Length: 496
Image (cartoon, rainbow, N blue to C red; front, top):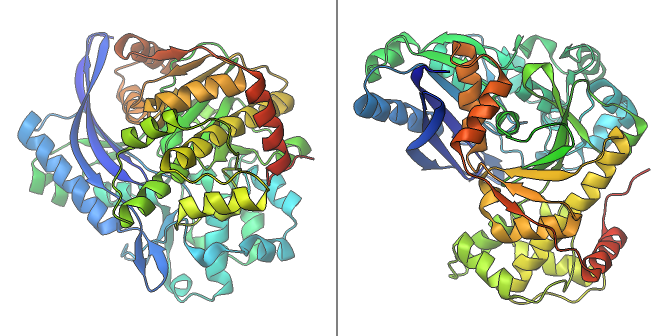
């Protein structure tokens, strides 16, 4: 590869969004952060929503900044966000209501209602997706049961990155990796699960075409292009689900590795050519989400650093301000193995006083209750590492493929303590980096679509040349074995 090009990646997560410029220059890729902005839920009358209009305004501002700093020459624009959430549009393309946040209470107990119409094993057989109340299936069915008037006038359902792509180009489409997070996509039929929609009485006409990652959607809409001075710039759907983009950038070789896309959620898995929809994968509650190049990401969604993020928010509301580095430093000084929690316990799903919830979990399970800030954070991080160990063992059992290393990417890969705890808990070497994997994967898929690289493997080789990684050697101990046995006793998720 010898071409030079600038590609703009919008990477929106649960806490923040940013615009990143990827510069392809010879045999290297460099990144420059163009614009960063806050994100998070907005509570309205007891419900949580996303402020998508403000987010799009930030994206427009970022494009304007690009035009000022780099000129009108950009080879592409791509958007990735979190999964499961969606917007509804009327037949004229107008937004109907504020999209809900996946942690909103409207999905509580919704699977019980779904299973009255369609048994649990049948839902999994049709979709291959992990059961989490945040899934689009639960969100949409809650609207059916509530007889939401929005469904009476809705013409189109778009997942959140697809909504932004529509606003950027005027084209309505649902990108494959994002569509699979809905729990109403059939990965074996490679289409929406129309039968599931019929069984649940959900309106099928709102679903739109599904496009593969790497699709060129078209140029920026003329009104936007004229306003910001970026005429003719192509908008490309990368892997629009952020984990899909992150996994595309994992620089590991071979097939005997596990990846962890680490952030608010930890997504731990492996890449497979076909979905694994079996009794064992159902028992472990694994998921088959879309990947790039026709692959699937066989993985498990784990609560991740949400526990620490929500602890930090709670302490800040009490007047105790800590940076993430502060919290990690305090956790390093705290006594190890005081208690363990299941990060995926339902108690931890919704926003609230997370330190109190961690203490409540420990008290209910007969463990020593962590009191100090550092000890609470250490309990959360050690428990996350133990959940990784449990998940990897399950993945090996299901796939019949051993795991001999772990590659952690994403913002959470900056947490050196968690990286070392993961190596120690699993007994496997951990490679951390690149930290910006989601933006990198977004850019790689744009580069592939525009012909700047010939294959994804060429793109991963580009990543290996361009970004440093850090390796953590495992230091297993009898204390870790004892902690894992305690974890198995208290976990709220059992296998078959």
